[in-house]
Structures are given as structure tokens and as C-alpha cells.
Amino acid sequence: MAEAEQSLVNGVTNISVHGNDKSKEDGDEFAKSWGFNLPELYKLAVRFFKEKDGKALKLTYKDKLRLVAYTKQATYGKYRNDVSPEVGFLDVVGNDRSLSTNPSEWQAWQALGDMSQSTAMAEFVKQLDSLCPLFRPFTEAHSAEKQEQQRKKQEEEDRLRREAEEKERQRREEEAQKQLELQKQKQLEQEMQIRAALNQQTAVQFAQYAQQQYPNNKQQQDELIRQLQEQHYQQYMQQVYQQQLLHQQQQYQQMHQQASNTAPTQQAPASQQMAPPPTQQPGSQQSETPPQTNVNSNVTPNGPVEGTTEKKQEGEDEMPPFAAASMWTRKDIKEFKESLHKDKDSVIKIGSGETVTVRVPTHEDGTCLFWEFATDYYDIGFGVYFEWTVSPSTTVSVTVSESSDEEEFDEEQDTKNDVEQGAKKDDRPPTDEIIPVYRRDCHEEVYCGSHAYPGQGVYLLKFDNSYSLWRSKTLYYRVYYSR
Image 1 (cartoon, rainbow, N blue to C red):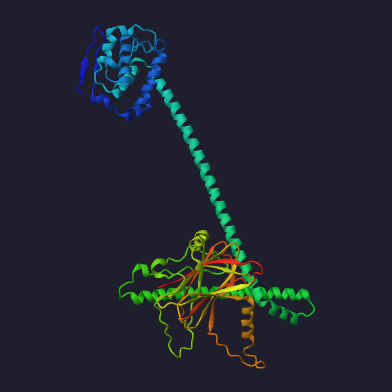
Image 2 (cartoon, rainbow, N blue to C red):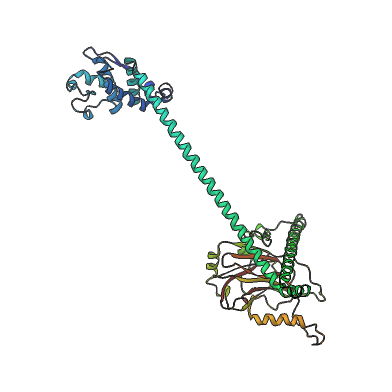
């Protein structure tokens, strides 16, 4: 709005009205010079005007009329007769109810015309500052009080933030300590399981040797047995670590060899490329992340596999070497069991004292076997073997045997070369141990593993419940191969 001037009747001082220049007063200027933005400063000015009028503030009628007109313009905007307040609206202080009867008061408000509300606020502050020297110290005192409140508020926020950060740090430290203790406890339990299995295998042999060394001295015999068991455990762990290291080296060599062989040719699709699964050393914390495999396109679940041809070269007597297996665990045991609950072929009830063997023939399109299993409530023994034979079909089969059957097989192995009893012909195909049978806490986690095909044959996944005299176990399992 263009600049305009209106002269009030009855000798009232001229009021200058500025449009765009005043309506867009820079709020930063007020904040810098006064310590408040315009709305806050205006409220503070009106408060000062009401409290000090007639006391510390002595204004003429004309000055008061001008200030009151600014307040009405700032509150209601442009003067409109249909929305104007009732009688006494110009009596800000509340002492003179007859002001509204004087036409000059109405004309003072009307004279402001289209002045914006922000401009009216700014003009009110400027007029009050010019009329009363006490207004600026008043605002400075409130500005200092405001800054002090902001400082205290900031200090309180900083204190609360530091306390929250300290609590979070302590919580993370406690969580890390708990995780470390759980890892140590789990490693200790795994070590105890391995020691128990090794001690059970060598109990008779070590006892006989100790009896020969220290006859009739039970204390020295026990001490010697403990030393032998400790040495046996350390040797076993060293051998396992060496096998794991060799397995990793072989994997790296295979990866480099495949990369060099496929470099000149077209690269295989990403869906057919499989990352090697993580290796697991006994006694170390097991990984919870399974290998990155495309199960939908590259694996076949339990059941028959069609289109396989069995070919074995004649005169192939030597068994090729194979790498160690990889094992890891997952935490989603509930989801895993629910996914297999409706598939009756994937759920097996293993009675007390029984051993279940899942026979999984190799597939001509596969290069690696994967397995996953879990149980309800109790652990179970698990091991993997490889039978060098040509299976007539590719169907996954399950056999159940009593513990006595396994013992008879061991006895036959021990006596088949006995000269006095005569040699017995053993028609069983050669079998290699991939993973020894140990008890697994598969009622707490999903146990998973993989093994690269060493050649054509049949994998034997043994689930051993022979040690349990009373409890039967419910097994959930899944096997598949990858290309």
C-alpha cells in the first residue's frame, strides 16, 4: 500500500501510515536490538503500557489515543464498523468509559487504514520507546531473564542428555558383558561335550593302560587317566583346527581356480552362484547367518529327484579326498519347525534307544549337500557319513535301527579279520566319516551344515537317540542340494 497520511479531527496529531515498508519489518532486527521477536516484544510493550500508565508512564491524551489505535489495529486489523468492539473499546486502562463517545477515537483507528497488523505492532513499540525512557530497561531486564531461563533449560537438557547417554553406555556394556558370558558358557558346554565324547571313546583303553602302569594304586591311576584324557583332547582339537584350516584353503583355491577358468567365458547367472558357507571350529561361537544360497531355483527339498543317471567308471578303486564339512546354527527354530510341521516326510519320531539314518544320494546336477534340523525339548546325537556306492535311485530314504544293531556292526568290524573265527565277507560299501556323532542342542537352535560332493555316492545323516533310555524325540529336518 502506498504511503498515506491522515489528519485526525479536533487537533489530533497526524498519524503516518506506511504500507509494505512497515508490514514486512525484519524480525531479525527486533531480535538483535531488543532480544525478542516482534510478537513477543509487542506483548511485552502492551503489558508495560497497562502496568505503568498513570504511574511511571505519563502520556498525553493524544499519545495515548495513538497507542490505543495501534493496539486495535494489531488486534483486529482494519477498522470495520460491523465488527468493532462495544462501548469503551478504546479504554485500554479501564478508567474512562466515555472515550468511545468521542468521534476522534474512532477516527484515530480508522485513520490507520490498511496498515498491516505487524506494522501496527512495530509502530506501537517504537512510539512507546520514544515516549517512555523506562521501556527499554524494562525489556532488557526481561531479555536477561529470558536468556537466563534459556540457559538453565539448555543446561537441564544437556544434563538429561548426558545421563541418557551414560545409561545407554552402561546398558550396552552390560549387554556386551552378558553376550560374552553367554559365549564363554556355550564354549565351555561345547568343550565339556567334546571331552565327554572323547573320554567315553577312550575310557576302557586308558583304564587298562593305567592299571598296567600303577597296579593296585587307584589314586595314581586316576591321575594318569586325567593326564591322558587332557592330552587326547588337545591333540584332537589341534587336528580339528588343522582340518578347518585346510578346508578353508581348499575353498579359496577352488574359488580362484573357478574364477580363472570362467574368466574368458561368459559368467554364470547370479542366481546360480553360491557363496561358500561359514566354517565352524569346535569350541568357538557358532555363526547365526546361513550361507547365501538360492533355495528356490537351485535346490531340491526332501523326496525323489527325477532325471538322474548313475554312471561309475570301471576300475575306479581309489576314493578321492574330500573337504571337511561346515556347520552353523540359526535362532529361528520356531519358524523353522512351523514351516515343516505340515510336511509329514520332514517330521520323524525317534524312539528311545533308536538311531535314524537318512540316506541322501548325490544328484548329478548338484555340487553340495545342505542339511537343517531341530528337535522338540531335548537334544540328539548327529553325525554325517559318506557311502561310496551307486544308488539305484535318487530318493531320500529313512531307516530306523535299534542301538543293538549298531553294536553288532561294531563287533563284526572288530572280528572280521580274526584268524581263529575265520574271515567274514563284508559286502558293505566303503564309508567315510565326515562329521562324528555328537549330541547337539538342536532343541534350542536350528543346526545347519553343508558339504561339497566328494564324488558319486550316498550321504548318511545319522540321528542318534541310543543314549536315551526313556525319552523319544521329534525330529524336524530338511535336506537339499545346490548346483
